[in-house]
View 1: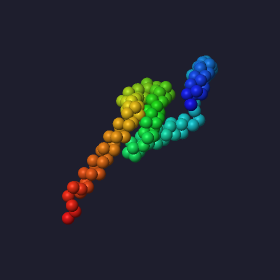
View 2: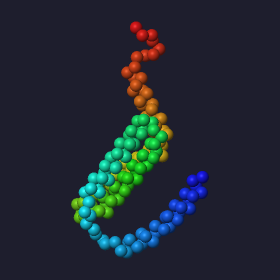
View 3: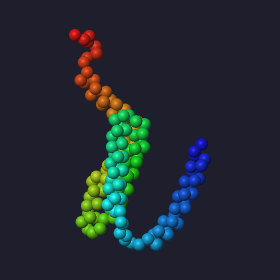
View 4: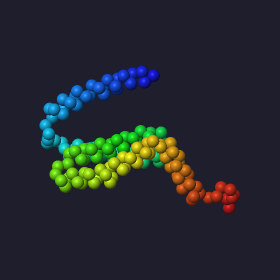
Length: 146
C-alpha cells in the first residue's frame, strides 16, 4: 500500500526542506539577472497553454484525467501569479502583475480547482451537452425514414 511509504517519505522531505529554505533566505542575493529570463517565462506560458488546452480536451473527451489536468492548471496559474508579482520591477509592472493576478490568474485558478473537485459532474455535463448537440441535428428516430 502506497500510504505505508508515502506518508513518512513525504513528511521527511517536507521537514528537510525547512533548513534549505532558511539557508537560501540568508544566502541568496536580493536581486539576480537571469541569462534565460525570456526563455523561462515563455516556456512556462507554453506549459500553461498546453495544460489549459488539456483541461478542455479532457472535458471534451470525458477523460478520467480531467481532475489531474485541472488541478495542474490551477496550480500553474497560482505559481504564475506568484512569480509575476515577485519578479515585477517598478510600480507599473507591479500594478500590472497585481491586476492580472486578481482579475485573471487567480480567478481562473479557482475555476480550474473547482473543475478538478467536480470532475465527475463536469464530465457528465459535457457529455449531456454533446449528446444534445448531436441529437439536435439528427432525424427523429421515432419516425420511419421516408
